[in-house]
Image (tube, rainbow, N blue to C red; front, side, top):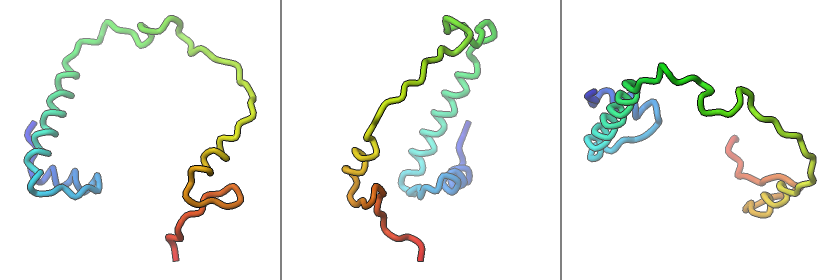
Length: 95
């Protein structure tokens, strides 16, 4: 599949990326390679493969819930630049 400049511009807008004009050709070529790879995947014959073929059982193994004491929040807050009363302090963004 050939990627047109119009398509690349729409993709840039949708992804909220500013695609530099000097890199547009490389980007189009990369996208064409990705789409070509995806086309190759669609040609793989998978009709004989069941969904559970690679699992030993048809059910997901469950585990018992274990309650344990953890101070993860304290550890995380210790790495925060600013915290107070067990909360992150962040810059005000809404006036």
